[in-house]
Length: 326
Image (cartoon, rainbow, N blue to C red):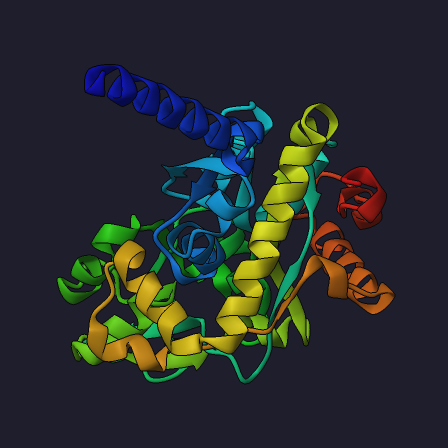
């Protein structure tokens, strides 16, 4: 008799648990898979925050992070359908990709460079005897991989330097400090955390803080992107990705120190320089205005006028609209 009662109790428990799981949000709304590209640098911090704080999961996304060595590689992968989005993309590279093969990307936020932000620096090697920009002529200048870094630095330098006399050399992220310290290059144009680490380790001095700001002020430099294919075919997944990234922006604003600690895990930062990381202004999708669109178009027009883009582009066609994901 007792065995029969036990069996009945177990059956009831199983049915209750089954009902709970069937009716729970997780069961009724299975996670949607998504591949998100990233690089081990500070601008990708929104992806790291959304992943580490569980924002992707809470929005119903099963995100796989895919690492890339340059912005060019990341965008090529997105255009080819190998990834679905990224927490940031360099606008210069994005515009070049749009000019070559339009219609693959949707931008849904903006980060600006200003005179107050030091995310990028032009560094002189400690023993390079370079103390002013003119002394870069005849020297080797290391660059962050990707076409945009050379483009934007050239635009800034050509006002005071004969850039044809500078030998530009792309240097992989993991070799940048080693290459500068061993004097394989005389100077380096790089971004956080590498510029801060070079100064911290006393292998470089800052020759020019944020050269980009002299080209356009303020300069919209990057922003989160999603593929138009994902928007067209899996609108709800795209919407969830946008929401998760916007939540990451809110978190970064409210918890700047914790956000920087999260960055440590992905960018191999030295804990000693975490507090020194800059806070470039970020605008969420919901905060973008006509002025942001105009400034971003002005940047694209500048690159086109300098021959950097193969043709002029219409930035408004690249910006995600609320109606596309609702």
